[in-house]
Amino acid sequence: MARFPFSAIVGQDEMKQALLIAAVDPGIGGVMVFGDRGTGKSTAARALAGLLPPITAIKDCPYGCSADDKERYPDVCGTGSLRKRPVPFIDMPLGATEDRVIGSLDLERALRSGEKGFEPGLLAKAHRGFLYIDEINLLEDHLVDLLLDVAASGENVVEREGLSVRHPAKFVLIGSGNPEEGELRPQLLDRFGLSVDVRTPPEIETRIVIMKRVAENESDPAAFAEKWSAEDAKILKQIARGKTKLAKLEPGEDLLRDCAELCLAVGADGLRGELTLMRAARAFAALSNAKSVRREHLVAIAPLALRHRLRRDVLDETGSTVRITRALDELFG
Image (cartoon, rainbow, N blue to C red; front, side, top):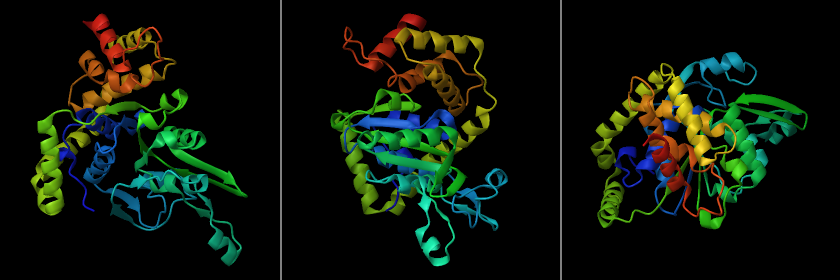
C-alpha cells in the first residue's frame, strides 16, 4: 500500500510537529500519542518514515548497520559493500513475545549444525528507523520497560540459553493508545520524550478536506504523491537542515533557568522534564532554522515535553495542558 504523503495530513499539526522534532533528535526519547481511533496516528508515523531518504547500510548485516556501527560492533555486523535501504518502519503486534522483541536462539541452525546462533528480533529490525506500537497501554509493563530501556541506551543486550549478544538498536519509539482502554503507568509514561493528545477534528471543513484527500489518494496514489512531492521535499530539507544545525545550538544560561522554573512551577517529578524540555526546545529551534535557542521555542514545545509528567492534583481538575499554559503565562507573561 502506497504511503500517504506527510505534508498532505491535515488537522493534526501538534502530532506532526512532535514527529519532526523526534526525527531531528532521536535521542529525545520517542513520542507517545494518545487519542481517538482513526485519527491518523499510524498514518503520520509511517508517512514520516517513508519520507526520509534511504540509509546506507552494510549489505549482509541483519541489523542494517552503518560503517560506524561496524567499528563498535565488529562481531555482529555483516560483511559486504554498502548499499541503500529504506528507513525501517516496524509495527510491533500487541501479542508479541519477549523472544520476538529482543531476539532468541536460532533453533533451525542449532538443530541443523549443533551451533548456537542468534535470531534477531524486532528491535534489530527497527535499528536506524521507527518502532511503532499501537495500543501500547495494553502491552505488558515489563515489555514497555524493556523497550524504553533499549530506546534510551541505543543497544540491545541478550543473555540467555548460553548466548551473549550485544547489538545496536537505535530507533524512534512511537506509541499510541486510547486512554479509555487503559493508561500507561506514570513511571513508564514519564520516560517518553514527547506526548501528544490527538482528537477527532471538530471542524466540518477540516473533515471534508480529509475525506477528499483520502479519496484522491485511494483513486490514484501515484498522482496524489506527485501532487504533494514538492511539499514533502521541503519537509525533508527542513529535517536535514535541522540535523546539521542541532550540534551548533547550545541553550544559554537564561533558557536553562526558564526550563527549571517552569518544571518547578508545574510540579514535574524528577529532572527528566527539564532535560527533555531543553533538548526539545533545541531541536525545535534547529527545525525552525533559528540562530539560537530562545524562550519562544521553549514556550512552543512545553506542552509536548511536560503534559505527561504532571501529577494529578485533586484540588485542580483542569487538564495538564491548561496547567502548563497557565504556568507559562504566570512566569513569562
